[in-house]
Structure formats: structure tokens, C-alpha cells
Length: 341
Image (cartoon, rainbow, N blue to C red):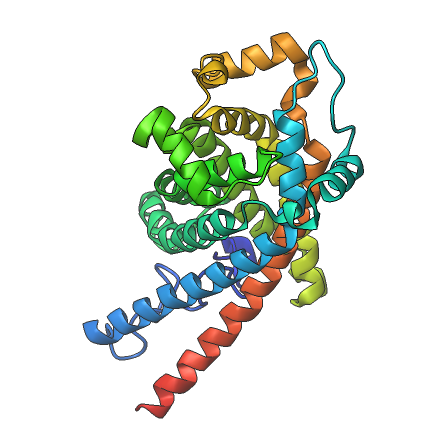
């Protein structure tokens, strides 16, 4: 991510997703002193940048997901329980985690780990690879030399994430059903049940609210992280503390805008392969209306505290690892390129 024009000349912060000096419309950025670089060199540079983003985001996402998965299991359990006409089984975060661990074993707190890792690695790596081309396309409407605006970064990140998650929605369905189940079910068993009841379309259950949620989450995460990081860097410089603080703010922002769609998405996905519940959840608006009518408006923010906790922890782990790996891989590739000259 590039700094805004008003900050670029003073702080020169390291961008989140793209190495500095490759800005559009900057004198000498593309061609140096002797004109345009050879196409082969440009292709190699672009390939290296994509590879760095892919690897850093994939590894960061895998570690962050493994560390924070118990909070996601608790969030799903709280969101799928209904309170109309009965007492809620889980009364809060700690109560849910303790009951799951006591009744089902500690391993149950990592239910759905395999599809969760597949989802995060594929989804985030694709998102970070797609983000730059989409942002460059959006910048085509800007005057020459003007970097991407905050809104353009938000929309570009959201679109990249929406495209990526629409491809990997089946992993989300499998993860959600494995986490919601109080019995031991393997990924193969869950997949067979969904296929038997709904066929191929069952694996794309809840794809519309999932795309909406992902657009909001990814836009808020990347846009807010970049904006917060750049603002703090002007006064405190770059470093680990800045990355942790900015990622915490990004996690809070994404949780605030995405929780209602996350509740709707969870209900959709948990109903896949269950005709009785699937009949009640036919569309985004109808599902949201049904939840509010039967459980109240607060039901759309079920598990909010857990989502905030999970998103803040997830973003802190992910962005810190991403920043470190991104810097390491860029430096390593430059050293390799110099040695091969």
C-alpha cells in the first residue's frame, strides 16, 4: 500500500503490499536515468513482488488462524444457538470455551482446523495477489502522479477479497459445520452430508452474505491498518509496536462493520444439508429479518465480543508476521539477484 501524497515526501514509510519506488507517475521510478527498463527485467521484478506477497500472506494467515481458532469455534457456537423459547446453552466467551473443552475435549477447540487453514492460505494469498492490479486499475482515473486514495484502497481490497472468497467458499462451509457440531465429524463426513442433501450448490451456501462480509472485513482491515500505521509512523517511526497497534485498530474496525453479516453467513452455512433450517434462511434480508423477529436486534451482534477478540488477535499475528516476512523475502530476493549478476 502506498502512502498518500501529503505524507509521501516527509515520512517515506515502507508500504504494506508493494515495495517503495514503484509508484505510478513518479519521475525515474520505472525507468531510472536511462529510460524504460527492459521488459524481461520488469517481468522478473513483478513476479518477485507477487511471490513475496503470496508467501508472506499465506504463512502469516496460517499461523494467525491456528493461534486464534478456539475463539472462532466459540463464536460459531454462540451465533448458531437460538434463544427464543429457551435458555442459551452458552452464556459467554469463557463459559463457551470451558464447556466445549470439558464436554468435548481440548481438541474440539480446534475443530475445522484443516478447512480453516486451507481457506485462510488460499483466500489471503489470492487477496494480496489480486489487490495491487485492482488498485492500479482504480488509479487509472487519478491525475498523473496522484497515488491511490483511502477510498480506492478500501474498495480495491474489498473487491480482491470478495473474488477470492467466492472461489473458496466450500472451505468456509466445511469449517463452520465442523465447528458448530457437538459431535466428532471429520471433514470427509461433513462434505459427504452436504453433497448428499444439497449437491454441489450446498458448498456455496451463504456465499452472498460471505462475500458481503468479506468485502467489509478485508476493506476495513487493510485500509484501516495502512491508515493507522502511516499516521503513527509520522510521530513514532516504524517498528513492531506500530505494527501491533495498527493491526489492533484494524481488527476492531473490521469487527464493528462485519458482525451482522457474519451472523447471517454463519446461519446460512450451518443450515447447509439441513432442509428444516435451510427453509428459514433463503436470502440475506429475509434471514436478517427472521433473526431480528425471533431473537431481537441484538442477535445480529451475537458473539461480538468474541469477534473483536478474534479479529484483534488475528490481525496482530498476521500483520506482524506479514511485515517481517515481506521485508525478509524482499531483502533475500535482492541479494540473490545481485549474486546472479
